[in-house]
Length: 112
Image 1 (cartoon, helix red, strand yellow):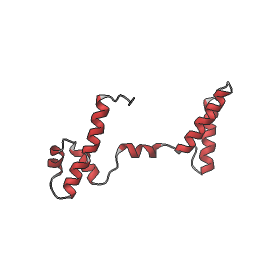
Image 2: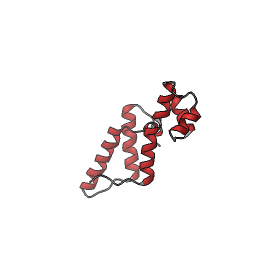
Image 3: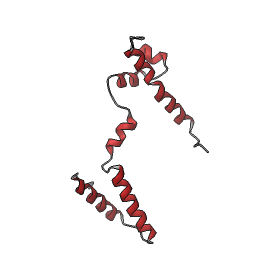
Image 4: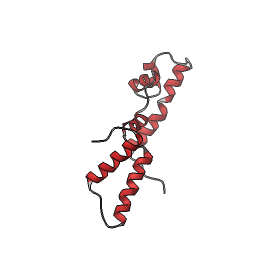
């Protein structure tokens, strides 16, 4: 059974696809004005302008805000689950130290 999406999530997804339309229209010189293109395709003018000038979408930039890579996060998660499987739970400080060890092994700066 597919997941039930909220109304705002569905609208956001539809708008994400529509954002490409005014950009393509401007690049193909079908419409010369960003404001007119945004109104025509019912998308925010500021978003159309930002994407046209090369700004990346938020969903892709969010990934850059994480210190650990996905593999490191998964390793840390598995390590915590292994503790749980043995009937113990690691302290927050122990998890932080382990995360810092993963970062140090990669040559990155520690979290705290």
